[in-house]
Amino acid sequence: MNTADKKSDFGLIGLAVMGQNLVLNVESRGFQVSVYNRTTSVTDAFVAKNPGKKLVGCDTLEAFVQSLAKPRKVMVMVKAGAPVDQVIEQLIPLLEKDDIVIDGGNSLYTDTERRDAYLSGKGLRFIGAGVSGGEEGARKGPAIMPGGPASTWEVMKPIFESIAAKVDGQPCVIHIGPGGAGHYVKMIHNGIEYGDMQLICEAYALFKAAGFTTDEMAAVFDQWNEGDLQSYLIQITGKALAQKDPETGKPLVDVILDKAGQKGTGQWTLINAAEQAVVISTINAAVEARVLSSQKKQRVAASAVLQGPAPALSLEKKALVDKVHDALYASKVISYTQGFDLIKTMGEKRQWGLDLGGIASIWRGGCIIRARFLNRITEAYRGDAALANLMLAPFFKELLNRTQQNWREVVALAVSNGIPVPAFSASLAYYDSYRSARLPANLLQAQRDFFGAHTYERVDKPEGEFFHTEWPEVIE
Ligand code: 6PG
Image (cartoon, rainbow, N blue to C red; front, side, top):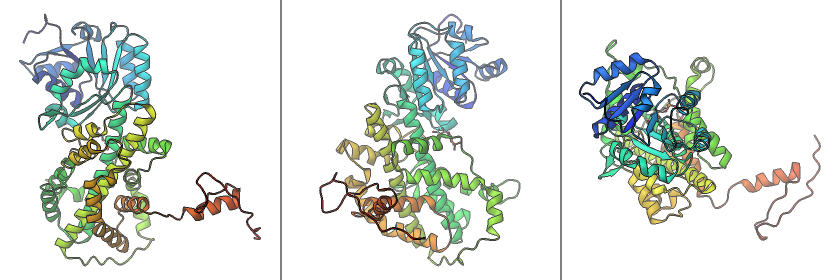
């Protein structure tokens, strides 16, 4: 198609698979899209592979910028970090006032804030947009988490809403908030993704220890995907477990090395949570489980010298499936509780004006953590916008009260059999701590006062009144 005379509605830089698929998605909604990639042959091959589409392949950034209708909308889909800054630097002299740069990568939200300030100082507009859904989501409809000025969102809204996934007719995109809010929320999405994935892996570990075949496990996950655990990650787990290795005929998961990779968004989430003093122990456990998994050589050596219990998983399979279901569901609730607590805390601190129910709602489709139960989180925040903790919303309170017995039985079973379930148990410890009217922190305060005269409050005196005891001298 000859598109040379018409200016494009949208431009995208960075034609890796995600970028290519986003372009095809935008184009399929009726927009003309200009594309640029640093290596020209990639651009040429992409355009040649998609004949008849409203695509304008550009060999130079100058030609790319000139091909766009004003205000120009340029989406950058390059590796997070320095490459984003490099592309921005190249674009600045070519763009004009009010043109819009959108960073669709997994950028650190503080980098987004820096870029936002930098570009607005030059009269340009910037959107830091989290885009979730992997390659398929990019093509068919991702969840999009855009941050930046509301006025810039209004300009981008028609394109974003048309390319986003739809659930119940609603596009999985809302304006998250100003500055780095969009990339921040995407970061927490990824932290939650880590939590969900680890919890599923712990369920798998229990089934494996109980002697389930991978096909039996696949059937369990398929069945769970029909119920209240329905989610993309449960669905792909069923499919992954059913997959056979063409080379050996074995279940593919059995030949995959047990060393998990990670690109950093989970770690960023932990750092932020520590800074904000918010407990995200499930996500923490998930990140650390990946770290320990990567120490394969050390683990293999330790397995020969450090002892565990003699395994004796004697539960009948159906009973185990039901109990693990509850442990997974309850732990998942804790993980989301913690993730939303962190979002709420940061949102209030930064005055981002976040709509927590809206965020849960756009995660129902397109993104990696898409799941049926996100509706319940939206309901919880719609019911009480000031909700202190998600566990206290009626639906979740009932769910936790109903599942807690099976959940602790699963953790006990795992512990007594030497099966590591760090995310199940961290979630349960959070639940039990949060519901404890009295914790052993009284002794901790005594210790602090003992060695450092840090003082303590008393149960029988008003809060805010501090006491110190002259503790006995220690003779060592
Ligand atoms: C998404 C994913 C995506 C990516 C993660 C993977 O929402 O589409 O989260 O952003 O797959 O960055 O992260 P790890 O490599 O750290 O597992």
